[in-house]
Length: 452
Ligand SMILES: Cc1cc2nc3c(=O)[nH]c(=O)nc-3n(C[C@H](O)[C@H](O)[C@H](O)COP(=O)(O)OP(=O)(O)OC[C@H]3O[C@@H](n4cnc5c(N)ncnc54)[C@H](O)[C@@H]3O)c2cc1C
Image 1 (tube, rainbow, N blue to C red):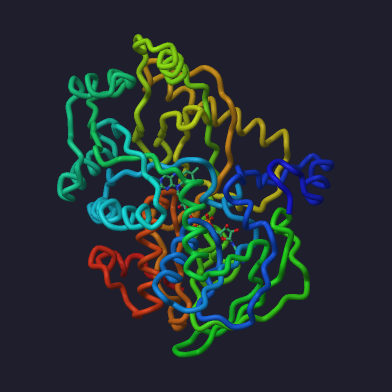
Image 2: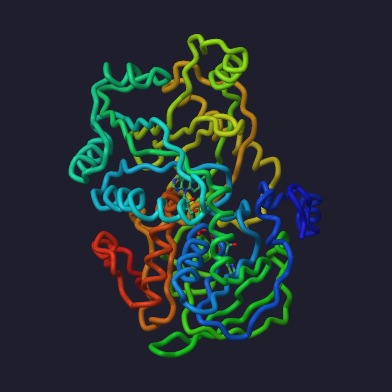
């Protein structure tokens, strides 16, 4: 299995043809321990397909909850760049335009993240100031209404108060702004979270097998075992699994395959649209000055670190967000792209790819110039990653109709990381008890249900 930045045979061949595959690079420092092939059992109690954050969270809860022999099968490796769970950070927020999502975020913050942090013995959510804003004739009006009814620790503030609380942001460029101060927001340390879930799942007895692609999934009617066809692949060359696979039987299967949902469950193919994301990391002038000043034991004169922020404008793709510099990665900023659609496995032309990166980063830089008092000028790198968009950004969580032994945990729609420990608990409760025990989750169950 290759390490960071190493190029697989397929990538090399494509590069020679002027195409580039999505690189599978990721910081592997804590994830290397998974790099050794593990023997595959032929029968287990539960198979989790996909080791993105949702699959890992389900595996942890299942293993820790005594679900028996749990096997996680991942065709690539934990944290890889074609999936939805890579990269260093995510936003935790309760600011949502739907009161049920706002309540669900509160529940995750109150119950599920603390449970994970306690079990892991480390902090995974790092509280930071957060401001969500946009014109009053856009969706922010719905956000304000929903959070007002949710009981979340979010305050609607006027522009003057916002200038004082968030001196790094500009509000004078937004006509008649609606501004929310989300005091429960945090930056999620995603590599730590992935590593903690892996550790905890394994401590509970789960086996995590990277480089193992599920090629087919059969059975799973009431009381019927599920049969899986599984082939090994180099985890960095996932498009070429070995042709001869092995059969594995399971009492239950959790399908957490993100943008690849339709490959195993063709009846659900239309339920998820893969949408490519381009995320920029900029050199953070403010944060650097703060650090230098700190080292020189001086006050950070005039230096203000941007908070977590989101500008929610008009139309589905006029939504931009940013995160402060965490651990020297730079200021993160991107557009929340929800429409378009491009499969993560599609080979790409290198020059078109670079041009698309440039165009997207120019659009993000325009917004940074409008919303930050001291916009960064140096782009450090562009990260690629994929959303699995479901209609109306709802998750797809529930048993496959007619196949109650097969549970879908997906449709992350660009906002599921914050809910991962909660969704993992829901999947494990379903496997154990056959239902949604949590009232907040039950309130959304009918909308989440996979429909074929
Ligand atoms: C740029 C970006 C920014 C985001 N920002 C936020 C944010 O700020 N806050 C937030 O809460 N959420 C955010 N999200 C969303 C969140 O990160 C995702 O919803 C979540 O990580 C999706 O996890 P997943 O496990 O469903 O999917 P994935 O991480 O894609 O995992 C699915 C896994 O299944 C594997 N797989 C597929 N098919 C097979 C097969 N046949 N056999 C074996 N394995 C298979 C894949 O290789 C993959 O690893 C963001 C997402 C992106 C991309």
